[in-house]
Amino acid sequence: MMSSRDVAKIAGVSQATVSRVMNSPEKVKPDTRIKVLNAMEQLNYYPDSIARSMKNGRTFNIGLIIGGLSNPFFAETAEIIIKTAGKYNCHVTLCVTEEIPWKMDESIDLLITKRVDGVIIGSVGRDDPIHRLKNNNIPFVLYNRRRDREDEDYVIQDNLKGGFDAVSHLIRLGHTKIGALHGPVAFDTVEERMKGYYEALSTNHLRIYDHFVQEIDFTDTESKVEQAMKIMFNDHVKPTALFTTADFLALDAIEYLMANQYRIPQDIALVGFDNTKISGHSLIGLSTVGQQAGEMARLAVERLMKKIENEGGKENCTEMELQNPWNIKLEPQLIVRKTCGANLKDPN
Image 1 (cartoon, helix red, strand yellow):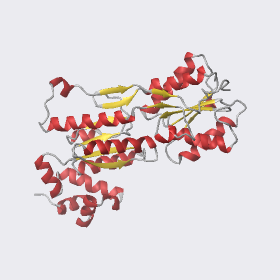
Image 2 (cartoon, rainbow, N blue to C red):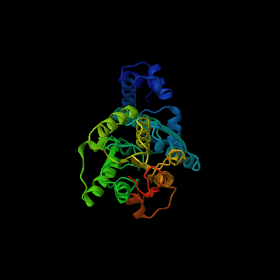
Image 3 (tube, helix red, strand yellow):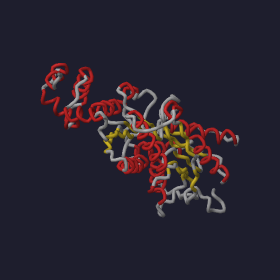
Image 4 (cartoon, rainbow, N blue to C red):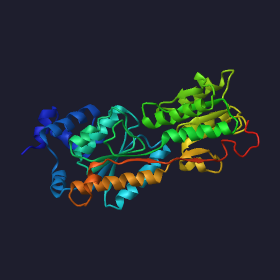
């Protein structure tokens, strides 16, 4: 029988380090942790407590991988997922990647080691190695984001329509110079929302100004938004309206605009995306595209539980339900509040 001593030998570390990886992985350097996890996988070694749970067929622990708690969308949906999983007597191991690729690798390694029953993934890039979950017979469901694989279960928003509806609304209010702040287009959510932006401008034969479109990565967003806004508004041609692919980007934009004496919505109108709780605060009143975030999160948990129970032979599903992946696209809703200027007779 393999032991932690064998793992330590393969990984080239001490047994104490192996123990720390299993019990307090956050205290071990990432490179060392990966060596140990790879050795454990190579030897098919699991701690006694995990082995016992595997014998029983369930650990009653699921993984949740999200981008970052600084994004209110992830914070709010994580809360819903944890509460919904609790109804199934499941604990949730939360992994935050901060949209950094190596942290996704690390999160997957951790969840495989813990032998979670399944994983819900809210943040995923096209090349992230989530196939490793499948290789370890761990079912997963994507929410909010998806990859270009129709055989994977996902619950998402119709992001293209949401972006199109938001920008079309601004156009109906009379705006012809509309800027966009967006996250990295490597993520399908952002890519689709920006497709909606471009499609709305093209449909209405409006010019696209290069300096109006600014990409913001998800590190130090406040300063990045400030830099982007300076590029937009220091030119002699300025936008009169702004679409952002996430509410938290809109809130940073509002901070910049107010600090620079712009009136909202008289001088610049805004529409965000996500409808996070803070966006509806009466002092902000952000017009936004509402995601059915609660429904999205709830459906993701329910689908994952069905997959887990099917694998355990406890759920009676038809063959079609087992074979056909869940590809659910929820309808967006434009929520009109103060920042778009719809309540003004002359939005310009």
